Length: 411
Image (cartoon, rainbow, N blue to C red):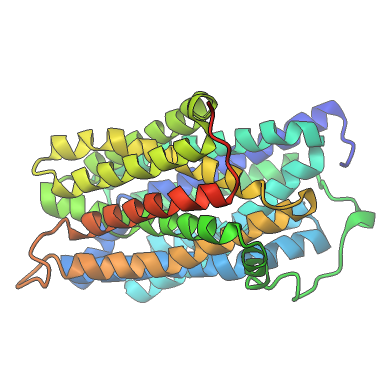
């Protein structure tokens, strides 16, 4: 850990949290308006579902390819330049999308956003550099809280600005990233000392290498499958949520943004408040199964809801889905040594990125075949029902996976 004066450390931590908040807000601002903008370009809600799914997949693919590369670059050249350049790239990306005259420009913007957003790995590395080992959990918790706050505020602000103009949220996102860049230029010190830097290696930056860990530990196999299915089902929201809400219930950008803010607030409550007490009472295994089962019920209710109010009420059981992710992670960390924890997290990120590439394409295609003239699937909520079935399958697999991981049930 590099020793900073107390004032410099506080300023650095403040910058990391503000940057995380502003960057996530910037991403969240465009969520309510990007699918309708795609629909304007395509002239078809069915085709918009496919294109939006493709854009989400492009973003995830760039993260999969670039996260380990950017992490290795920060090991070689330091955290500060990587974070600042990524923030500059995000600001330029939103300007590009604000001016986009067609789908090709939007696609280029999604690719650039995926590359620059991969710098979140460097944000975590920076926090590790400037905090003692026994304080890192609290530091990571603060970053997570900033992310959640950004996902609450971003879609809400995007919904409000989207009522003014479909391009306004992109300009606001560019401004937020620009503010973070200027703040960092004056406040952010370098956290990685020169003598601790490592030469860049493509072998270390290879995203496929991290996946080998999951194959080398037999007990991790089923848990990694459960983890993949959870990520796969979760990308339903990015792929079709906004389009479905507008098509089925006629909701405006403001209404969708408000609902997404509610989703973020519920997630903050579940992960920040409920996980600890529930795990203490039920244990990791039962809490994981409860989260997956509740998520399946919630998504199924969303897909079956005949009215907007019932769709909104289904968010309550769906929010308990947030119990699953931290408990899956906890069970997985028990099966590797301390020296392999970082590699395990890299492998989990790779699993999530793979799901992020495949899932939006899948759900976008399912949605496009559920709407429009003579749909192949006669029910518009088919994508939600499929996602519920996937989560239910993950809950069934987790019954055996948790036992393989040696979880001891309380009592």
